Length: 228
Image (cartoon, rainbow, N blue to C red; front, top):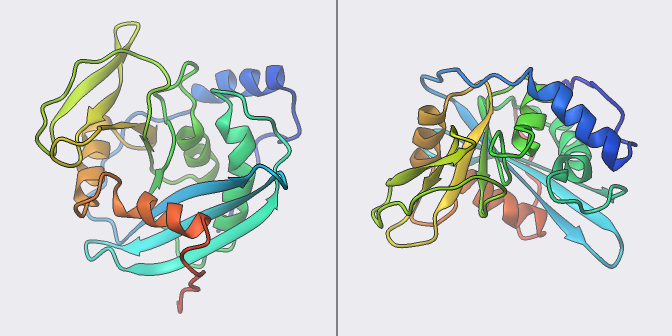
């Protein structure tokens, strides 16, 4: 896959925040996807002792959700852990894995925030803008905003608001389990983001794309190269 390079990754934390603020204005909060052929999930695993990370991209067919391709990249992580600047730490590894893909996904689900971010530019938005692909933030915890508690039924959700603006959905993906924080990444609207996350759930809290990407990043799924 071809990646658009918009800036250097060797930046200070102050420069990183400025980049987020600048690029956030380019994020599209709209877009409808009718019937995707491939849906990808991404995740990263960090080795704190060696200061390296493994980024994984898992591409699944839809609606069967069968593995079509898995690409994994392991390299040194240079950016420090700073809340709100996750993409500068993890995106270079994930983009390197995307560059190896033979299949182009129609949607990418990211284990992280999209616009549900203090500067409206989390890792899902960052990846979406550089890839030019619709992305969805599918985080396990909240970074900002307030919300009511969604109903215990699977598919129930509550709006996540920050400063009076809806920035995401607190989505119950399985009966009476902790909800996920779903937000627009890029080139999709929130109702569609919620719809596709639920369409990819198969009895687990996490949707299959990010669940399998977590396994691949942890070394529990071997790389799979697409045949076409």
